[in-house]
Length: 80
Image (cartoon, rainbow, N blue to C red; front, side, top):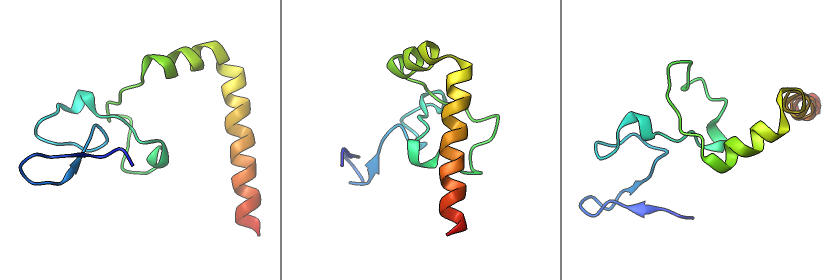
């Protein structure tokens, strides 16, 4: 794990948690929680330049196809 410990409290912090030291604009959406109801259309997220480049290169049709394939796989697992 790549945790950063807060110097005073010793608690794990990072851009995936809202902390007083970071503004909400620096909030990074963790990959594992991307579909959590905690995140709505008003949550600001940071998309790294490398990720932006990959998504722009893929284009909307390929992204839709990938989402459809992943959704299909999840539904198959849920049927078991």
